[in-house]
Image 1: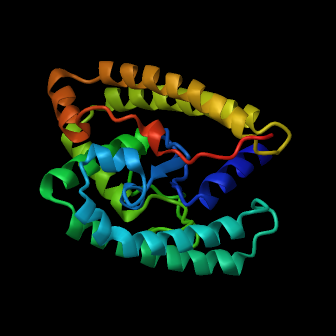
Image 2: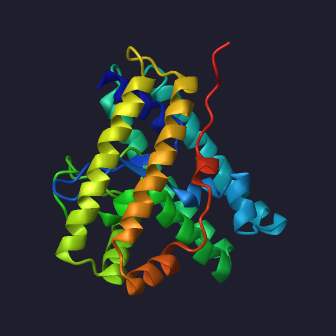
Length: 261
């Protein structure tokens, strides 16, 4: 458990992920995935994928600066992990993170054209991974009454809830299919947690072991997605293809950590 906390601290400090609590009965996965609106500000692979122009990059620069300042504060706050973090400072950063998230979302929406927005939306669904099958109204993942708009919140964000609803309405999974998907996702979650726990060693975050674990989880994820898609009928597969578009290598969106000397 300590190893998992170290991993979460590292990812949160990088300003990369939101956290989605596992939801009873739905195979919820712990990480909500990267915020693509924030990532498109600086991630070259994502910018190239949606064909972001130099003029658009210039328009996004003020948002880039705000995001960088927020990430700096996050890194400083979590530099020693979770154990001795000031809860009041977490609350302050949560509020600030919510504001920055909304500002970034607004400027990205104003800057991108229709085709770029469509592709970014498709990638955001791919990034959410199996959390797209979670119940957006499930209780238990949002203690403390936060509004789920960014920062270090637990529970799905409003944007993630909207995606969950959209996927549910588009696929219309039967009870039998939901049961099948739940079983597959539960098994994936179990094996993934074990791999990342091993990567944490004795409670210490090891970048090299984390990278190795990521590769194993990537392989496991692909195998699980193949099984999930096998459970869909032809109409559902077509609907799913429309939601996610062409596969994007989401590994290109991950933070990079300095390796040991």
